[in-house]
Amino acid sequence: MPALSPTMEEGNIVKWLKKEGETVSAGDALCEIETDKAVVTMESSDDGILAKIMVHEGSRNIRLGSLIALMVDEGQDWTQVEIPSVQSPTPPSATTTGPAEVTAPPPKVPTQPGKLGVRISPAARHILDTHRIDPKIVTPSGPRGIITKEDALRVVSQKGDTAGKVVQPGPAIQPAAAVTPQQPAPPAVGLQRPAEPPISIPGKPPAPGTFTEIPTSNIRKVIAKRLTESKSTIPHAYASADCDLGAVLRLRKELAKDNIKVSVNDFIIKATAVTLKQMPEVNVTWSGEGPRQLESIDISIAVATDRGLITPIIKQAGSKGVQEIADTAKVLAQKARNGKLLPEEYQGGSFSISNLGMFGITGFSAVINPPQSCILAVGRSRTELALEEDEEGNPEVKRKEMLNVTLSSDGRLVSDDLASMFLDRFRTNLENPMNSALL
Image (cartoon, rainbow, N blue to C red):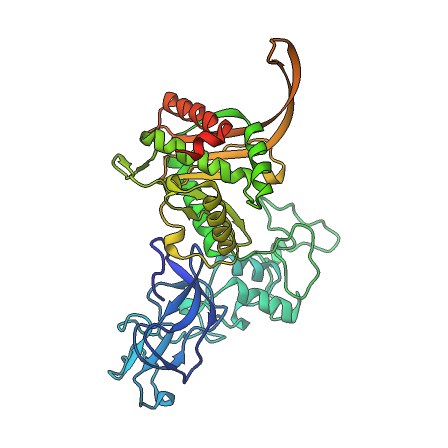
């Protein structure tokens, strides 16, 4: 399993694009691997024949460096390839898609029933004790012969609560202290285990208080890790402002007449890029020891997908027009939803924008994407009535379309007054889109 992104620690095999016995040339696509960011195509680095697929489609959480396939040179009998093991190293004629020194782990030796020293995980012990099942009848599948929770659930689902040898809970009762049927049992001391475990049992209807474990994708694991890192290590500061969208909406209508389709979010991206060009001191990241000034204005846009949130990057946004920004954003958003983003399309960035206006959210505060210094949260627009003077100085009521934005900034890099000045200049650029287009 190769490292296909800097933060990747494990991957999932989505689909093999070659079959065993097929001839492979250098650069050919071997399989699709889901990393912590996207689904990436793994290419072969050598010519040869794909002799053996060690990890099949649908396998999850494959650690980096794990052996996933074997290749042999052309002309060799690929059907006779030996699977490397601890006792039998990889033959010189066979190559692997992973590191050559990686070998398959030794086979698991399950503990035989009836032997002493049965190893049981805490969750499995709780299930077996609750259902009064003798651990000796359970075939372990965990490492070093440990009975896992899945082993216990399998026995429960197959044999029911009365399956197996019944083990009487608690210490043996002495004859002198025996309780007659007419006498009530002495009250239990301390906390007692529940009559039913709070887990769902396969093949049985769900009981009250049970739960079902949901597999977590690699993307969501990374999101959870980075959000925790961001909120625990970055001193977040927040500032909000209202922007008048009147000029933007009028310009959109004019562009639509020429069949130029751009969204309000495209104007927001353009106004942000122009503001960063005017205030380069905000276009910085945190390197671990201090600020790092960036020369390029690369804006990350948050895109929600079925696998989680990902932020593709519009590079050199400061030098792009609104229509070019719109076209780039559409392509990146579609690739993100299809899981086809390349690593260079989502790694890096100097500033992030998260827009939840399409979901009816009035305003919110977003979490900074480290090592960036800021993220702009955009809500939905709202209609307001305002009293203004006309050309002759007479007061009149006008309708305005207002937009709320909230800037989350890193207090180590952007001070409160700098964040306030950034928002004020951003508002000016957004409310004057024609001027921003010239910058």
